[in-house]
Length: 381
Ligand SMILES: CC(C)(COP(=O)(O)OP(=O)(O)OC[C@H]1O[C@@H](n2cnc3c(N)ncnc32)[C@H](O)[C@@H]1OP(=O)(O)O)[C@@H](O)C(=O)NCCC(=O)NCCS
Image 1 (cartoon, rainbow, N blue to C red):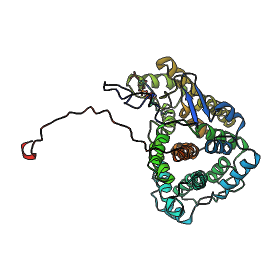
Image 2 (image 1 turned 120 degrees about the horizontal axis):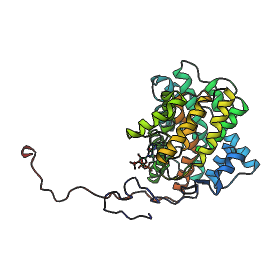
Image 3 (image 1 turned 90 degrees about the vertical axis):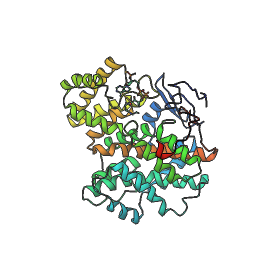
Image 4 (image 1 turned 180 degrees about the horizontal axis):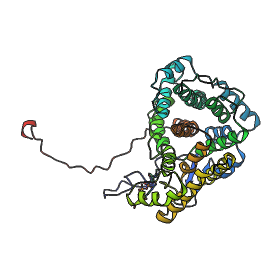
């Protein structure tokens, strides 16, 4: 740890801000410069030139794949798309009104029952588990959405990439190249982000040498909160509530006056523009232009302008992903599961790294309670 526990109130122990709680070579965030790198590669280059599958290889193997390696990984992922029949039967039992992120968390916990090797955390076996999880996250999310709509899940297509297959299973028709490309880059942008809350959770659980399913299930729980992966859905709800560009300024000013947080703004590390938002802003515009409906993009721009002038806060990854997904016709409550569909690559990368050089993660708490109290018998209290 770089910071020692400090007994004074408001110390870095609160929220662990600025504390390095692990060493990792997977990704790094420079909050001052607004820079994000995966294994040494700038996120802007990866967004421009790589595919999500290439990034998955990078996060797991700490280097970019050659053509043969990429093709092997793609084949292994596609060969793992199919869900065990027992899991589909289980998904059918869940209440239709269940939140999809809770469905995903429960399904991943149950998926472990159908993997006889789940307890084997050797690197060789863990890579197989990582492939299975990364391949099946999107299949579970799409199947859960179809089932709650009273539709049969669409069989995954082994000719499609993770991005293409997800949109295909969700919609029941082959998506356009544009939608697949934009969605693929969205997956790249959300794939990893250093020691964010869910990744830290995954590492803490893996650090006990619990298996990958346990670590990932816990990570989904951490992601689901509105201060983390739940923010993207909240952003779209806010935009729908605001309703028009003219309403933006009074709405935001009132929210700030009432000390309410505007979801999709601010960041624990970035003090300038989140580099992922730069791409997502463009996608939000592109999707709006293509649909001939730029209202959500225009409103988002206005919210951004007011937030910057009123609070000096910049949009984070969740802000423009909301309107991008909305224009893709994706239901609001799938935005957080989609975050997980991408972040599973980073979680598994970090779990592999943790297993590879494990030390139980066991910090101390800065005790601020009383000491030496005399014990009072219960009927005298
Ligand atoms: C992400 C987040 C938790 C980071 O928090 P943090 O660095 O600990 O910052 P704090 O929550 O302590 O906020 C610091 C100040 O900025 C304000 N602030 C931070 N984010 C804000 C937001 N989204 N809207 C309004 N005000 C915000 C706080 O109210 C506080 O103001 P104050 O000093 O006047 O009280 C926070 O910005 C947030 O809650 N954002 C909204 C949720 C979100 O989009 N999450 C996704 C993150 S990728």
